[in-house]
Image (cartoon, rainbow, N blue to C red; front, side):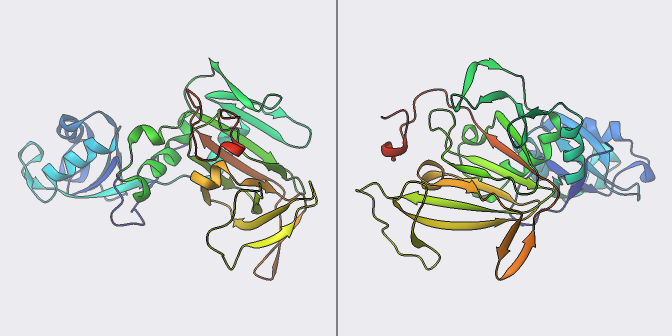
Length: 310
């Protein structure tokens, strides 16, 4: 699959476990091993890679963000005696997920066929008959091809001050949707997974619709111009709908009320309308859904939807 691909963070405040280091490399007589010996003092390294063809710029990849930050603060803009006294110019760099390589990785592994779509499970298997996971049967660590995605999630400014354990994800479900195949309305089982649910869309687009069903006590506090109260024919009750367009390479995050109280589903049709434009679904859409398996009972603020509190 080749060497990892790196790029400049889109957000200037985004930290990363990877550093772009200029003014060192084989073209100026400094080997990767010499560079590694300097940077490994700050933490465990994944490797040292050529940043381009110049021979004077490298990527130093750490196993964690904290080590990279320590190295950046200690070495950026300063002469380094161990590297010939050269001043190093450093900035953060991020792994760039390659959609085709991600798809090739899952396509090289066995799929499980459901009624209308195919799935793969990693970390823990999701059991559709009980809508939960068997926490006693771990399938192993998440595959290495997920590393670019996990790094982008952990380095997102949204989680800059978050508890690191909150974004440690250990379960992946890969879904492949043929044209016209969607997903029935549902809320991911509260007792199965923690608060954060990430879903990466690849290969093709779709519309995902969210529904908040009335329960007698709940009332929307703030009216929204994109919320509409409609009759939901599935059960005859009223609900509020909201639709989101998910293009390829988009990453959806569900948390809080959206995760615990809103049903989400993908309509079963081959054409979506977005801003008045007709968008035909691709020959396949593949989603990577990442979650953290819950160890205990759910204690969310939405007991009417919670299997742990019924």
